[in-house]
Image (cartoon, rainbow, N blue to C red):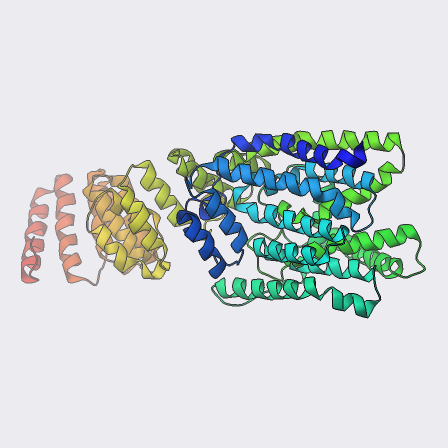
Length: 585
């Protein structure tokens, strides 16, 4: 019964387990770039065809974009069609998995239980519930289909399906070596290498193209490889897959040090020894299985070890294929124990299914996704930034501002933080959307040191948008000018404390900025802090106009203090000097 109906049972199990995904919406985690904002989805069928002629967002994955374009052609913002397609594709891949594993000689019963264990793992959720990650689902189906075709001795069909998978996600490229290994089981090394070229050549071409496209998309046009990345991340993936507690979308990663580094070095020594000895013809069966398992676990991780620069060094989705290797190994061991082992396997599947379903609910939308991530990683600035973006996207600007202020307290120089805060504030104050969408975006696209000439036009309006620009954006070398302008505008709007604070800060950044003193004195006078105002009027300045006005302001202060005669003299002196300079008193 299991032999004949296993693929249908797995298909139904996958559909049932991942059914909650169908009620999810779109998240803010790259989903807009692949759906509502995608140039391919917007154009429907023509966009699907154009996806094959151009790269997008630093990658050439035309099949994934074409499927998304066709799926969202009628309504790009409707999440259901995307989720439905991804749900069905994943279930199809699961149904083919036992036959695909059969290509490697995996027993049918072991393959079924290994597949069930693998698909129930909560790390699979990103490959089903995350619309932007459709590329994983498509490439998975194609790889499994290619393996299943190979197991049926349809090798040219296998090669064709593998090439189709490369168009879904180029990171399949290293897995062309799997077919080289399979061919070696059928023929002598030289003949096997020649016959495996049908997979190897497209794999190499796709890998080279992927690196080139990604490299051209980088601002510097350079690749960087940190030695610690390829040497240490495989052990991170191993540990996280075996203990998937606290699953989340983003992980902060840094190379291990001290005892952890020693453990990694020891792990590589053991791995090298197992592979070296286990691949010998005379190696014991168990050692050979461990050696092959180690190679198969590491092979899919090659694209994610720093060869191509990544925004996130480690991620759950990168365990898609390595986790299958571990599942097969565990199922092999447990099935050997008969019914007891099978019972343990079923218990593990059910135990993993619970956090899996919970994880799917976290992917309901951007707010639920990043709220759960903040709870797990409160010290991650990236997580707080993403939660702020999700909150702002649904109009919860007060909460978004709080998240951004949290980031500011953690990492004041976080890239683009000033722009995020400015946009959130613009939403909170219900400013004209064109200001946030057009003008703020234009300013934020410039380097901080290049913003002032553009910002000056907004500042001249002297409205709420002017305050947002002046008070939130960074201006590099022009920051003192911006702070002085912010102080003057705040004073005009009778926001005295803010006016004083900005003017004072302007003079801290640039003591020669004489005009900021005027704002300081006026704010102090209106705040009735007359002694401080009087002291400031004694400041020596280089600008004759400012000096003349300070004389008049000293007269104003003395008048407030009741020293009317001296005040009148100073006011007349100030007026005379200003007229001589061509200024209006």
